Structure formats: structure tokens, C-alpha cells
Length: 62
Image (cartoon, rainbow, N blue to C red; front, side, top):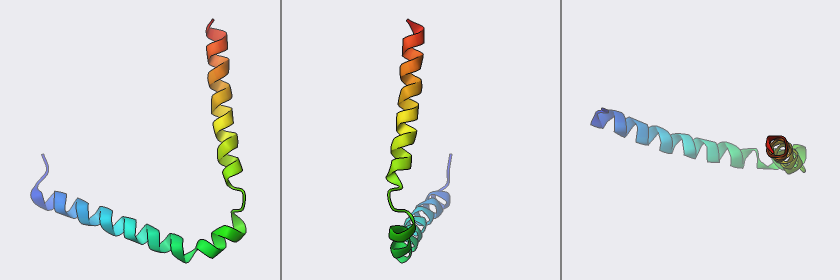
């Protein structure tokens, strides 16, 4: 299916991508703390909305 070279490239690409993302995140960590305070509330709101949709679906099914 895939050649050995393709697997090698994919492995190096994944490792390089993860290293680059960690570097970028560490570099911007101070800015994240300033501008993205309480951003977890957006995630909680989204999860609550999805949960509400699920409850409505189950309720209307019966």
C-alpha cells in the first residue's frame, strides 16, 4: 500500500509538525495568558449546547 519511503516521510513530518507546534505554543504562551483568559467557558458552553440537543432528541423520541 505505502512504500517504506512514504512511511519514513510521514513519520518525520509528524515529528517535525509536533515540534513546530510545541515551539509556536511556547513562544506565544504569554500572549495566550493575556488574550485568552477564561476561554474554557466557550468550550463548556458548546458542550452544554450539544448536551441540550441530545436531551431534546431523547425526549422527543419517546
